[in-house]
Length: 216
Ligand code: SAH
Image (cartoon, rainbow, N blue to C red; front, side, top):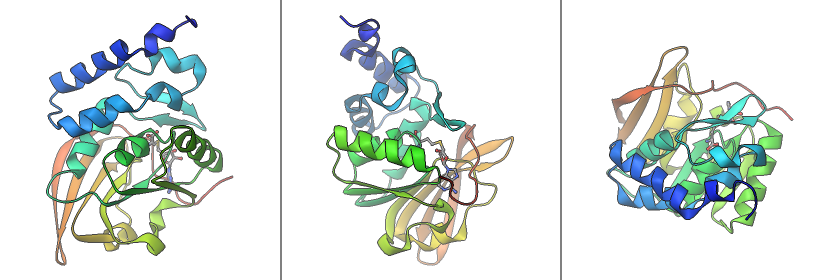
């Protein structure tokens, strides 16, 4: 057995799912999606043995792969009250959140401002045979107008204010989940009904900031 391989085994993964269930994640389809995506393939090999701990981990470029509990919480929130045919993600990062969504949605469109991260994520989707994810290296604050509107939008970096373009790319009945704030952040779930937007507060979170513009 390769050194540390036991730490990425099915049993190790199952323990994480049990833990998420204990923490209050009730949506079995979300849990099944998390259980089917090998998180260790989304981090550096040196960190693979920590991939099934419920923690955020560094992915280079000063960015992090989100904590599995938060991935589950945001995914389950998007699945409430409507279909999940077309999904937009802002902040591809490692691609883990997009891969989880790809198991539950028709098609996932994901935007990343760091070119190196976008390319690495695209390669992971290919290796895993996830043909229903499209990655674009671009500033997510503009959304993806050519593919809009979306049933659901997920922002995985903290916004001081939610970019207006994102609301306008949401379908009737669509949901948008986004961490809002700077030092103190809260996870918000917006719902669009006609021209009205309602929102509820989910919980305090700690994301890297949503930054303007794209970089190589
Ligand atoms: N969803 C990711 C974690 C995201 S970390 C995962 O599952 O691994 C936040 C990501 O948002 C970082 O990769 C960062 O580069 C990206 N980001 C920050 N501002 C952005 C913007 N304006 N447009 C697109 N991506 C952005």
